[in-house]
Length: 551
Ligand code: AMP
Image 1 (cartoon, rainbow, N blue to C red):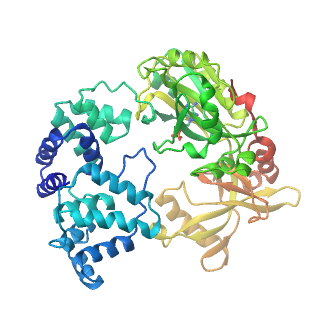
Image 2: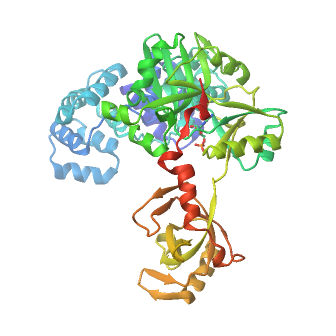
Image 3: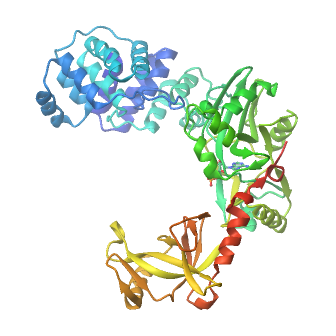
């Protein structure tokens, strides 16, 4: 640990990035694999590798009590030292100087201690922390606390740690970055580079791989242009959460888009995966699904972020995994295989519920793609993924091999009925607009939402003048205005709401256009809002499973 601290201190002492890289590279080169893995993670300011959903759960009060007990200094004295540094590590280093009985402490012992702190509950976290601090040299304690606080503050970015790995093992930085993209773990990256495994294309099961991402396009024509392929593949853009499934015999682990382990949240998948009959790494989307229908995202939300799921929630919001890629199969890494091969392998697995295959269609020209897109939207899906059939799987990249084609399901023409003064940057201008549609049964205007995004500062300034002149009632923060300004708004969904007289509220409305060309008489009606709700967002609008995926 003292070696680690000295290397860290030397890195912190020089402002020159090349020098930092050289010092850290020399330190990494001296380490065996296990310590290298630990040191690379700790130098990045992390107590645990990012893929493990682990946090220390150690608060300031426990930390200051322990430092006070080891250093035999009271709160006032500790506070005075802290104000000098404003950095927990530097504070602990000075407070403990001459107050510990330093011994040789290995990085392995540091790892064991961090784990003991993590697993202990409440005040029991103090004991392992205290016994470690008593054995540390003050410089080592300074860095131990930096690891705990999650901040090195020695001018070391993750990019510099990558550069140091490249320097240590004579690897080109581009290859180190590529290994890091695949593994998503700086410790694992360092070890692979030490072994000379620069060929990043090998996957280690249960080590999450960064997800391939898609670039947005506006139109089918643009999709064809950017992809420069004769034929493209399309898949539904499922509205769930991204999920990577690793399965080897009875061991199963799931990872989320940010490479956090989420195994506990979806027991249906972990229980069913052993029956797949092959060792696999799948990429897909978890959807909430009940009685043969995909449920809306807000239902799935109830399942997210849970370590355990009770029987009631499992019954109310069961999940499936719609799979669109396989990255590893029975020991074979498939990243560099074309999508066509990966898909064929997927189709050959004979997957069964709760594992489904993404619905795939081929498009040969923009008109064809437009038709598929229109059909997707008819089914109530907002978007379509467009994929190059010969592309490899490129972890962590937002390239042109995957595109997402998204358009709002519909827009509404509405009239502004009330305006509000903005906050922060928008202080002093009327920037929040409540808007309404027409209820044709009563002839009245009924509010359906409030928008604050989509206009430029100049447009808001002009609107402020206009609305001031149109005010019929000044209620301080809010002003009722003559209903004359027509806006076209886009939105994510429609919900039932008691807040507005209309009974509906648009979610995330944004202004797409000012429709000065449109008379108020011609704005959209409450019937249209209710119709859109029934069709796309209501209980009955759930998409039949057979429509979105085939097994
Ligand atoms: P966005 O979140 O708008 O960047 O869109 C990309 C996300 O769409 C991915 O991260 C996936 O979670 C999701 N997605 C839904 N369906 C698919 C699909 N068929 N292929 C790839 N990604 C998909």
